[in-house]
Image 1 (cartoon, rainbow, N blue to C red):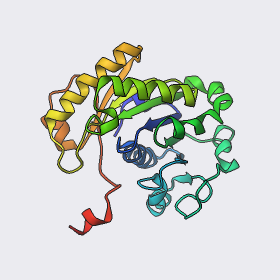
Image 2: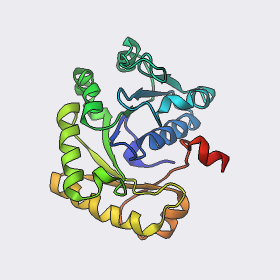
Image 3: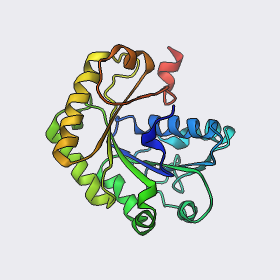
Image 4: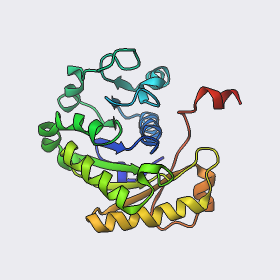
Length: 229
């Protein structure tokens, strides 16, 4: 998985629940490590206790990826805290840092804490909003734009790229992904966002007729009930 859109040192992935941003974050981190880059994956999800990067700690650390996540994440404690080690990614050497930012604008508020650091490294940073048009809260252009505006405002980082990740897991087909590209591209144009990407399973990307660059994604965040089936 190599594309010029992800050459930046800092990659920030935001998106609503079910957008697939955690899946993309894992794919990018594992690909980066495979290329021999010193890679850090920051699980910055302070909202959602499910489908988070930290669930794959064994996998990412086995691949040589440094994993940072909120204190008390994946426990029964209600309010996770952001450890001071996260700030260190802006100060210590490294080739690639991927931020998996949780949920809606509430989750994106965690980015605001690191606003001065991101501003110092803005030219090295790509901020991408991941969108699954099959999800209820991003099913229309107006819904997508509302989410984008709220995340950009709370995260204080702006959005450089929209990623169309329209899917229904293993039941994904080319048609919805094509329609997702149309919607996401229209939203990007309305907000002056210069980059649009498509992400999806390789078989779906191969079958779809798409205009924008594509990012093949392997599924890692598979629920236990689906693995057993």
